[in-house]
Image: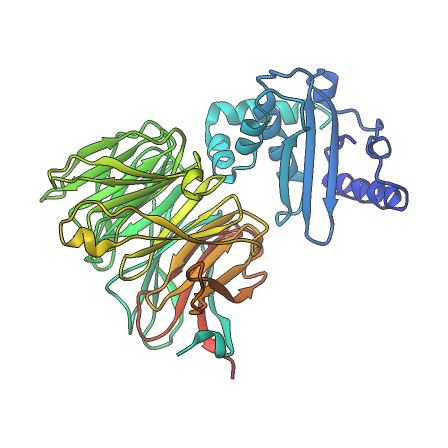
Length: 143
Length: 349
């Protein structure tokens, strides 16, 4: 499953459609993975795959991403970029949880905790240097 | 009066609009109540707003906006016990002290020193000390001198991570802090000479939280406190404070009970009312109220859910605070949706 588009609505709908389709079968990661929308971070080989779980009723979305190496120092930056991009794409009231896929990172718990601490995320994105880096990541691509 | 037997509901009195970004915190002025209660709110829009209820129309309006001081999010605000001063803690690393001059507020001092975002500020019961805490892992105690002067009295290190909130005990000069390191620390100056030390740490081994602790609130008498966490629980703690009042040394806090299974998103705020109702505000947009079940049990007190207000806001609730007014049960809430709401707890008609 990849995020691909700049236009918000198709991204959300595309995910919903995919999930609806796969709900009839067993939830299979292979079905959720969609190579149609190449992800810029994927092109940079920083991300290999995402998986997204959407709870439509509760308006909650869980994104799991897999850094390519166990000690990826970019993990929190990637997470911030995902959050920043999703904030642009998703309706404001959606609850977003972001995690590294289990076993994929040496500091998994620490990275997950930082990425899901709303106050830390807000403060980080208020930091001009970090904000600039994130903006460059999310704007420069086909994201 | 057993609250559980009354058919109570939380009615929305008014929605206060004005902030241009999420609202992080609300604080009731401790001295103003009827006829004109005053509420402060602070926001990601870098401002603090002061709201007042008109005695004539009973509606709330924004009396003044404290702006052009903080350059980043204002994360929390706190009134001095006299109600004349308001402290504002900001991600810009400073804490503003504002004086109410009647028709406007003036920033009379700016406390600097923290290395990065200041998360919380609290006045002690007598108004002689202020405490602040920060992502820099430290807790600072400031002495309130005369003539708008504030002096750093102490820098307290001990937490191993971002400190989320500081709260002075309601009757004693004992300071509490809670953190991203999952612990609550208690700071006390035994000889009352201003030399504060960490006298207790409430961590997982003391039946404490297993994730970030976001807030602390005391009951009116100060012998119990409630804490809330990212671990989805509220915990109630108690101490024999009469021991401390009689000078017998430090009375440690012990875990009384844990309220679990009620929340499925981070609980950002909790507040204990003067008539013993505990409110919580969480990331599922709901406000919950809990009361002591008053059933004696071998395991000690237990708390029941009095009511759950779903969709109290359209987004995460960051702060809940009971009004100090004795006349009615008013609750203020602040949310990521940019709103402040005033609620009244009433018997269903």
